[in-house]
Length: 381
View 1: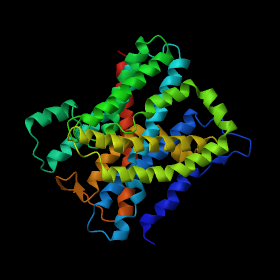
View 2: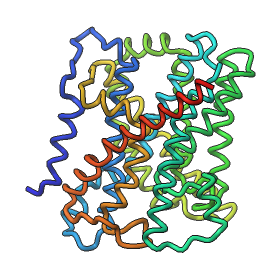
View 3: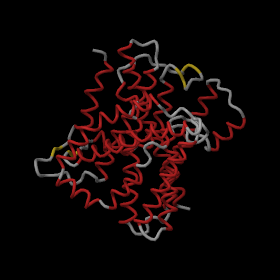
View 4: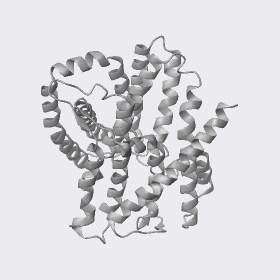
């Protein structure tokens, strides 16, 4: 058996090692706790690494067909995995706002320091590599890259959206009369952002594609869930088996239907009005897919407590791993973002994965230390 297929054994072990299953009539009451949510996000950032590697392997023409398609389950999974981050971000923001007096005091400096430092540092590394590998970049684009107004790394879009909606959260919740009205306003803004995405051509300077907006609605949904958490959980517990079966039954057909609509209509046609309608038709099944995926994660988590040292570690460095791994995915591939051969190509897909993960961990720790250092300088001013 090719080593690449061993990941389908390794990943479930990482996820479920040390987990505990609640007996009949019992529940994992900490399924929304910080430790469990961080563990889930730790797993998701690892799967996002596989997602981006799978896309690189998928287009390799020099690999045997079996190997080329060895990571197919991850190729289209990115929008589902980022939805997990958006949901728990929205949930956590709302819970912190309603439970911590003065939460918005110094909110922007506390929340934005780490993602901004990580964004600019990884962007500069990507920019330096592009120049070193011979890419010709015009003066205008150099200014945009160095300013951060245009992301040099094709992997940093999630951080851009996260920063944007942290600012929106602060402005809305700072001025709204209460949490409920603030959540409504925030939700309307996110909806407007998604609608805007339908009208902006692919690969523009901002909103580069559908992945910039197809799962972000989970952020306000996380807030809505947090606002009615007790009622929702109480209702679901009384009808748990029914909800679990319905969501299990629907998730695969909906995912296949989503792929079908994208293949038939797609997000690529920018003509008006038909291009916008095609994007909308492709977006709606994706939204349902995202909802079903997040709902299933929560339903399963109500019964299974996950968490081990590996997931706890990954959960602490999700931001850093998310940004660093993209650089390494390109460095160890055969092709560096389409501009030149990669500097350190790794031909074996299994070794490729190992190199990306092993290299990402110490660099992520270093990046975290730099973020903390910058954060300390800001807080001491």
